[in-house]
Image (spheres, one colour):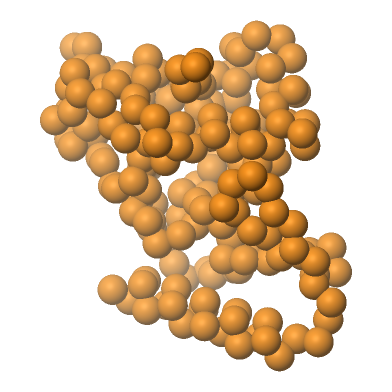
Length: 193
């Protein structure tokens, strides 16, 4: 409850500060519902606030991991930072750098191009499930599907002691202030239409 109150207070403060600001602001939008405000070249929004007291959110965990630099670069290229710091809860399946490197040559570079921002966001949203689904909860979804943030579904399968989501094996799980991050060994790609 304290976290929700803190988020509301910070959001109110940002709105008040923005309304008092006389600087010219430019807004940029893409095909998704994400809006980013830029003032003097600096990104703004909840993702860019610094808070040394709160438990790290899912974005903080990814940023702090040397094994997820490609994922962080993709999140930034798709302008999804603010979505990953919202109150959630969120379950994020975070592919490692090695998982991105296993994609066909040139795939990551192509997706990171500005003209592919929408496609990249759609793929990244395929790695996010609403709710805080820890390992024990995921085991209850054996042979069932999870609804993802991009309105697609991903299957869960238990093989021995291992949990696979969308064919990707969960390697580790890290609790976050707004959900949980499951480190996975593969980039999950939404079904092609």
